[in-house]
Length: 315
View 1 (cartoon, rainbow, N blue to C red):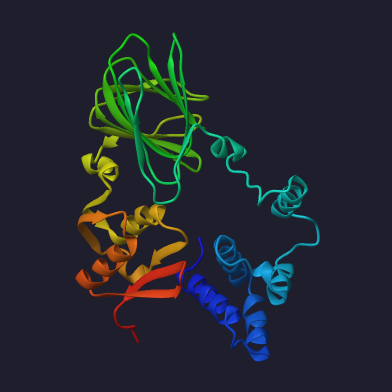
View 2 (tube, rainbow, N blue to C red):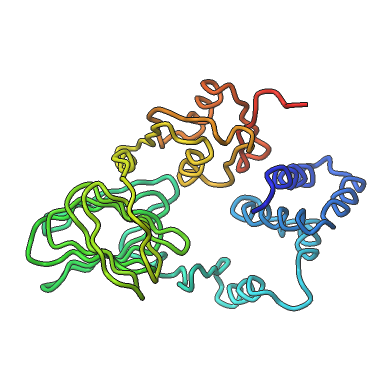
């Protein structure tokens, strides 16, 4: 994991070098700073995030900066960039071995910060969280959902056909009326059961049941022990992020799903506790409220790079 201070320094360098006042001395100092391997990794992270907003490749200096990150042999990322040019599209990414066009062409998708809901003709109801994609197939034998990314909340109706939801790590299935959510993370699926019971089946593992009030994460081979579910975990369907004595760093990790760019906090304040209901439609307002109630400072180094820090720097 990248050190927080190093990551913030990389963001600061990015802001300096993108400004009109950047001098040759600034660029030389940046290159000296970049010679440290950890600094180079932090710079790559900032550059990766910046690509959605103001890519370095748009200016001559940015092209030079990017060239310093390249290895003698083409990397997987560089090869994918080349392929994307051939295809005439944007940058092609691979996550967990699944090509992103499944998300791009899914039946239902949401943008970052968007939440949608819709009823199914057989009586079930679906809610799709921010930056998510799902396919829906209904036939005489089964009701099948395929979640490619993001999070889905399901209110399943009670009928003879099972409701099956597939993810990269396996599937969950119910034969009864049930209410549950599934969150697709990198390399794992998190199931939260709010009502009823649901069967979990990892791709290469044994099936097990998840009961009302349980939360279980599973990979492709096995499921982790169950934990009590937080009923507020479904508050996002009402446009609310509910925090019940949640650590600040965990709260910000959840809030960051509803906005573009980087959002983090200084490790010195990561353990502060957050309580309350916060509107997901206005994340900037949420940050200002946190800063006020917890006596913190919002550092907006760039429009898309924001961090919470102690109000006064420690000596």
